[in-house]
Image 1: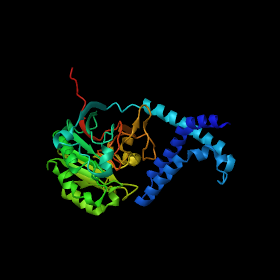
Image 2: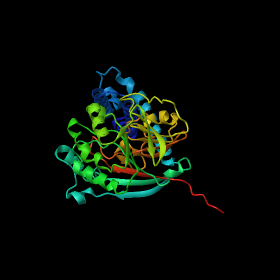
Image 3: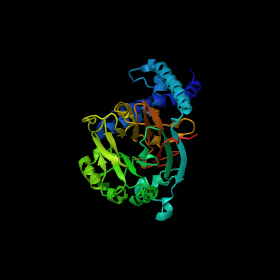
Image 4: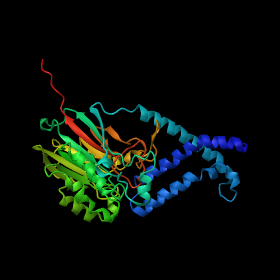
Amino acid sequence: MNSFLSILVGVALLPGHATLVIASHNWWYGRLIGRRITDFVQILHLVFLLLFPVYLFPRQWPFLPWGMYWGPFYLAAAFLGLVMLVWTTILRNLRREPPEIVRKGIEILTPSGQLGYPGQGIGLRGLLAKLPGNEVLLPVIEFSEIHSAIFPSEWDGLKIIHLSDLHFRGTPTREWFQVVLKDCARHEPDLIVLTGDIVDGLDFHHWIGGTLGRFSKKIHRVGILGNHDTWYEPRQLLKILQAHDYQMVGGREKVMLLKGVPVRFVGSERPWRGGVPDFHGDHPEMFTIALCHSPDEASWAANSGAKLIFAGHVHGGQVRMPFVGPIIMPSRHGRHFDKGWFRVGDSLMHVSSGLGGSQPIRWRCPPEVSLITLRLPKIIEE
């Protein structure tokens, strides 16, 4: 094969190579525990991604152990990766949300108008936030309704705000989050579910009181921690959240009254922290809501009898290509549970795109808060 043809083949198979590397990254990231090994594996996959010329032209690298025999085998693997990319993209675009879900549009928030500046923070992260096309400072509230007879009649019209992956780190600023959460409070939710990754540093624990702690006392608040939270004194973080009336259910269950109806909340912070809740005197008739930081825990939650599941962690991919969708998805399911609503067994699961991120880059995936209203089907009397 001449050099020109090799380059053409390489360009054609580069997406397949990237698919293989990213699929490996997603699989491992969903299982790893510990910040250092997680960072190491991410760097290792980046190196593999950039070394495609070594795989494509093995004869140019005679000192490597695989020599001239590696190229054809890896190119065949890259071709299979390309087929996998095309197939999963087709399936993803054919996927439809469960019929119980009714989309009600979005509200585009403008915190910059209230702040007088975009809310980008300082330093390199602040500069990245202001890149043309970057949506990291352009949040939305996404509205949806669940029309189902599984809810108690008292819950008809009940409003739930799903918050996830705020990643307090300086960009966006604390004032930006304050404005966004104040706009959310205008909708008078009955329940807030918080599905982890709240802080990205010890210096940001004190942000909680002025942001998540400012909701009305009458709003029920339930939460869990995420993998980033476990890196920054999680016990201290739990105490702060509990001091602001958040019932933390990671690895446990909590029964609460919601509009006079008992409801059981359960949470999973696995694989990073804790185990599964121990159901004392399991009551199958009690409505169960599960909070999971990662959608990888969806099967556990559904098998636990949860009718509603809330998850985050994957950020919707943060960068979403036209038609293809998200690229990086830290889940062992790859791009399957990217964002929005899914049916898992008899359960409905909502996966949030998150309100923040460790890397302040978003494209075609704005920061989001989800406001979900429960509706009972109307009975038409003849």
